[in-house]
Image (tube, rainbow, N blue to C red; front, side, top):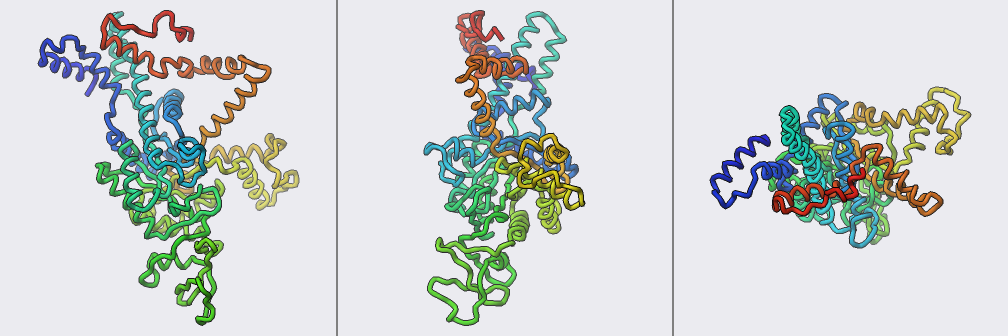
Length: 530
């Protein structure tokens, strides 16, 4: 319904209610409706799930249509990302937000900063989703409020052409509300716990939930050691739990990302249940490391023996009670994990790797696509990687394989600034710049995200400000390094009162109080200096 259609409907409603509603102005009510398009988190989840499904189909048709997101840990951070995207690119299309469990643990827990080990309060994840969408909806209200103010001015000036132009902008306004890929870690417990938390996340607005195949009570960050995976049966139960949560709440096209940490995980907590040779449990157990035995005398107290490839094998069990996988089986386990997940309810994959290498990722994805041709990935462009060193070493290795002289470079010391302006340094930067495009085309990556960007940018910008402000620059550090740049680069937060809703509040006061409204945005408001 257009703005004018809403005004007509509300005018009829006011007339029907008689004199009791005489002070209600239909234009104001229509304006409030336009500035609050989404009424509930489920409205958002249904809206964004449709967007994500359309984007997945577009990527299948053209791999250049990949999607991107940045991780965020506060509603304001997410809001500013989307405002910046609309400012610089004119549209939010194919740009999402990522909600990182790592950042929730490190920055949102009431226990204080925690490692990424699922020790933080599980409900804080759903709480952050709700907060992010609150700020994105406020960004809609803020942007539309400026359009409505301009519309009132055009009406007062009698500028019919400008009125028509602004009403068209209002009717065709593109929301800042975009899909959020939300990290549920390993489900925070058993399948029932996963189901209950997934419902909270979906009710808060999540259309896409990412779940990993680690053990909940042993969960580690994907780029740390000590990761422990679960048998496929356990993981698939949690995928089912998430799907049932989506279906129960009416988000029929909700998206599930199945993450495998098997590439860097050498341990499992359980031996899989198997009923016949070649079934899923048998395939999982085939990767367990152990020693063949020939008699009962080879078995000591506490040893566990399984039948593996027709032989009795005493599996290697650590003092922790965990079982060890055979070295070098990580990629094979990843491929089995991914195929199994896609065949049993998952929509997208996430393969956690130890480096950003298109060839490595493509090698695994090509094997998966032999069974599931439309397999697609969400990929973590992680700050845990040393991107500069990795790509310089990749260029070095490629040159060396080609027979090119690399004698001028020290492979172990390629991070050094002395290589920044070299041919190798420039080519490595070019490979980094093209990584997402190349990986989308060659390695099946539908969505590229950076998990922790604002954690690092906040630290870097704060360090620069503190160094100058508490040093010789004093107040100039803030004025030149922050405010002057905000003004000249058109950053809306320079008018922080407006960004926080001051003008919206003033307009509401006028709606509610009429001429008696006491507004904050008058001539003495210092925001007028900008």
